[in-house]
Image (tube, rainbow, N blue to C red; front, side, top):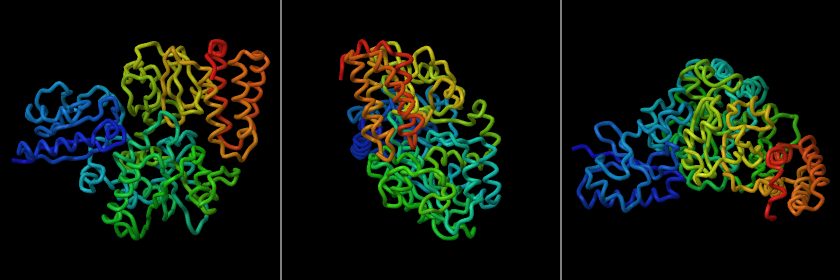
Length: 513
């Protein structure tokens, strides 16, 4: 009799709520009861509110059990592994939260064993790289351009233009720099993908290298992701052992390898030029632009800088065609984005949807509303530098240009929900304080402006010359937005302005610091 396959996620959010202990309990119960099992540590499907989500394969169908604890394991075995149980959800491919998504980039996350070359190969692994070798570099550049893919790290710059620029720039050495310094509050899509499909990211970087003529890649990973670091390290070893990294890959004449670099916890190193400085062993301080990294990037050489999700969107673009990707989304916002639901939300997790879905649909249909059951007061999208949207703006479609029109940004797709008990004056203060703490210090508007911003907001909260300080705060925001060297200082005014516009009454009712 074949062994029963049991899937237990090895992913940070699942591990944080006991997935490792559940896996141990399953192994022990199998030994105790004499049941043959194959325990597979898969990635996460992204339904964080169901973790640990254990799956038992029965006749080719994976039966899901939610929020499993070690105490539940004996009952799962007693039920016949796949049978009725209080935690049973039924087939994983029938869970509404998952099947109503538009999985393009994250389709392997949760499905496969992330550290199995065999499993990866059975699910289109390295097929796009092989196709790239067959079609040639310009065909890949054309497909990425036709797809309309824009940078998913926050800036939304067209990926095809960036890649073509690097390809057209002369250089004896070129680089692919993957920005995995995922520091925005409420974001975890990069981490979930690196832990659930690390070989897919490796393939993506190799494709990018082939397309632009780069022989070396770097992954700049934030230090707060220790499990991700272990998984990526092993995945890189597997790729080298399998001949997918190194010299003359598949006899193509193309050589490419990747180095994994661990950051030191600086938020500003999420900015591309600060990241490049850090990779070079220098202080993580932003550079003046121009020159752009595409012309003079890492070690002064032409460099593609993309974040994890941007790169990982490419293999299916190569396999299925850029036009198919461009058919999803709206206007100039093509394809899909992995939105991440966090904060005061009943069902937190990752939702990959085509652009055009509204904020309200994500919060209500996928997130199930607030965890507290109270009305939504504000939603911050795009990390700590993103604007706070009031409840009346939640029907805004998620579209880069539509968000620009209301003074907001989509950024990395993080969505943090606040209910009607939130003190928005304190949130405005936090934005300035965050900038003051995380500023690299290179430019005065960011370094000094954020510190003065905290002081001005404190006076407003205390009722000290509120009208005069309101005008001063607006002027300070103008200066930071117009004169800061990078987005750290330039976008800190976004959340502050949105609070002044939509929640000004909170300055009068705030309880102070």
